[in-house]
Image (cartoon, rainbow, N blue to C red; front, side, top):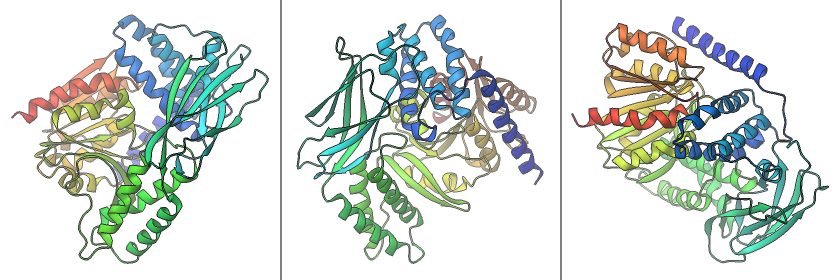
Length: 479
């Protein structure tokens, strides 16, 4: 009980500290889109920033942008979409050593939101909302846009006097071919029509609503009795909800392969309705979107399955993230590349509190995604670092090592006495004192410890630290 109270107090203190610093450092909301609605655009900008950070080898330029990244991180904690988006854009430009023109700034601020992320092949028009995530301190020039779905091109002129948000109707290429495709955008001005390009994931399928209705009927039937394969049924149930969301609205957080998910769900439903039931998940290779029953509800997990993998890495993300964060962010998916290069498996659960039930992630999922694995490592960032330490205290005898990044221990570390640990933090990281304190506590009890600081702040320390953490893991795998 005391441990739970201490952890709750620590989490509340972290949230309060971040909120107070954000309130002092960041101006008020600057964009017309609320935080939750801008999540996809913030993710897109974060990935661009992380790519630029990893490409930049100029130490002085990196150091110069850290205050801007800190503004973005603190704005994220306070839910300030406009501040976050502008700080991310400005930082990315600075890392590229580029000073945007006024026109470029307006193009950078622009966001495009499709009304739906999953279309029926018979739908040949897609409504798209154009908006500005933040205000630019100069008059907006006339903008030109080319929006393409397949080979069909829609030209849009956005005069300076046009109000935002602004809705446009985009033609979709007539086709009989189902696909996971994209809405492609090229935005500029009449004098410079190609200032910025980007893609937003879309999917197109035949008889989509009928197929979703059939899936719903199958899921209802399977959930009428306790399932023999609870992870499979929970995954199929969550998959239907995911597909339904893609059908009803634009991309929520990241680009998802709707058609692939639909076909996979249909195959799962057929296999689970057969007699006898057989697992639809065992033996899979590649990325999986799983849903795991726990004592506290259903836990989403994004996984990289590798049946021959000798190692499973469990990665706990930071506050405000999701199971997609290690796959799509944190160095634009650096941990996925590192695992793929070694033939290792990866499990990324959704983290909302260290007190949630992550036991099945350790006890059940490794046997499903990597049945030959002999070692399990845990990596965690910020809130995920605290989660790493809590989970490791319970499962220390099952783990080969842990790597908490930018986080402090919320309770006793005695159970970690013999567990190899890699503690990392940024030199300009607001969590650095907690990481240093954690390292001191582990060192005092002679825990096998590696401690390293990186010239980064709270977010970008993760892609900087991951290569060293994986080299550290390699040393144990070879033994």
